[in-house]
Image (cartoon, rainbow, N blue to C red):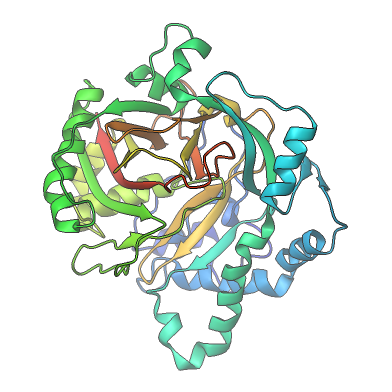
Length: 425
């Protein structure tokens, strides 16, 4: 267990004997190093106190980390460095997109046909991070105002710990050229690379209407997944997000109305939505508690969920444009290029659970793909989790948004809908 993340919590063994929350066995892909995570990678759910699912322990760890000051030291090194590239152990990084783009052009970094050479933003902070979600009761407790102030600043500072690095983007439609005999529209591509491409003629007419999306689009995606993976027995779409930088209406989320709102920004740092722990926890809470599920209601018993999850299951995100993408494309990284790289866990602390997402540090040979001018009928698919851990298939992809430096200045920003799903075999 990390020495900086132990204030007031039991040992893992002690916690697991009294925990009331679902705690998955910690898993690692064969050949993958341990993650950069708190508690040796064991889920915070194992530190449940009186039904809090480990959230108290996670908030305490977040405050300990702030007091330690390492995060601020990383920010200070970035912001106080001389103008120009910042030397890191991964190579030169850049504070500004344009600085990195100038470096790419000055060094003649080129992409293959259909591709791009461009800056992507990676974290340079090799420590687990914490984000207290907006619905957490801490934000509304006057007695915890001082803690809330510290935690809010730490969350706001998270983007200051990233730098731009030069990367090569390949055209995903040409995957067969890079891997002869492999089709980007096949389940074999998902198994090998963690990314693929599908076709869909949707009958959904208004993706800003969450009720219509759930009624029309969710079943369409579930059918697409069952057709795409012929060995699958069940597919569940459980939520979605709409992305539109130019949206001017009410964008607020309303959980009670199953309305995710509209995202008017794009996540522009390399990340993945799940990891070894959260891939299983999220599945289990959907099946047994129907927790934060916008799709078909799930009411499995614990035993039924155990049986379903004893077989292979995957989490797949699918992104469909509402119109041809002009700027801020959604880009994906293929599994083989980071299969031996430790991920960095980011903890999202709710009142009743501690979610886990991941970030990765830069490698020049990360295998990135994009879909130039992605059409509304083209659905990009990325794997966020796979229960197979023996190294025979991809475990996940990671992804981000980026700025296309070749797009016209008046190119329309990406408007798309992203759905999250589980596929069972």
